[in-house]
Amino acid sequence: MPKPFPKEGRLLVRLPNWIGDAVMASPVLVNLATYFEEISLIARPHILELFKGFPKLGNLYEIRSSQKDIWLLAKKIKNKYKVGILLPNSFSSALNFYLAGVKARAGYRTDGRGFLLTHGIAKPKGTMHQRDYYLNLLAQLGFEVKFRELKLFLKEDAYEKALRFLTNLPKPWAGLAPGAAFGPAKQWPQARYRALAYHLRRLGYSILVLGGEKEKSVGDEIVKDLPRARNLCGLLDLATSAGIIARLNLFVSNDSGLMHVAAALGVPQVAIFGSTSPLVSGPINPRAKVVYKEVPCSPCFSRSCDKGYICFEKISVTQVLEACQEVTQT
Image (tube, rainbow, N blue to C red; front, side, top):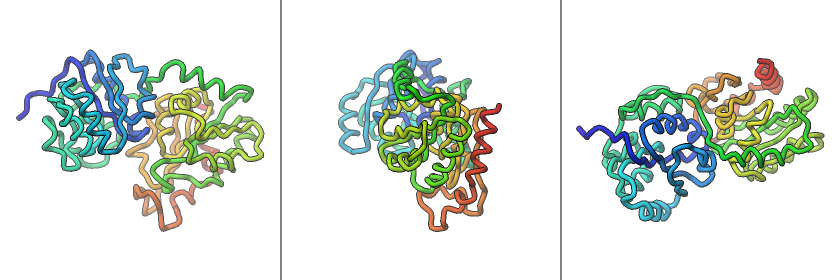
């Protein structure tokens, strides 16, 4: 049996690679902050934007997906940290800690990496929300889990920058996020987002479409010829997007990273699910409403579909609009 996992001093944490997963892992940091005097983070550059205001923050280390980055980062932090926790399941993240000389290395025994961990934890069986998956790792390592809510750690300037994009746009504000990085099987049809935007305008909302560069053309179609509607896709960094979402009166999205950002901010939201399961990745937000139609093939967790995306075809604009009215009346 290995020695108990260290619970004091300086800690290095590798955050998940996806926006939503990183947000769902945020309670991990809050719980760890009661034990460690300083916590340094490794993540993709855009992920780190959400954690720059973390109270016990040490250093921020950027990493991308290339093997070269893994070796370069390991060299940069060689022997600087004695204790590390891995939240991603990947072999490469464990290899990075091993090469960096992190003495106590904890994470799930997945992806054939068990031999690289000093404190390998068995992956839990059965269906579990991703937030709870991360917190289970802490519990198995002997940490007390008291905090379970999602939380963002934005710098104050993120909220200030957001105001510039809301200038001269009357309230109430509704945000639409039609994208999902995972693939089309997580994306409600563009035409229905367009129709939803039209109906929300009739209800008095100003419309903001949010997303990355890949969603720019979709955003253009959604706001085309609509008054009081702006397409911000590809114009904002993640922190500023979060700052805008924090000020919204309503947010509608697919199962995506921005959905979890909205959940962490407690914004009234409607989340549209297709190929994925709300039980695994649903928004943790008392002001959220999930629209999901159970069909025999869902959840399939696939990126694309050869059955005509029937899970989304069964979700009408009227159903989503009714959900919008429900979450904004409570």
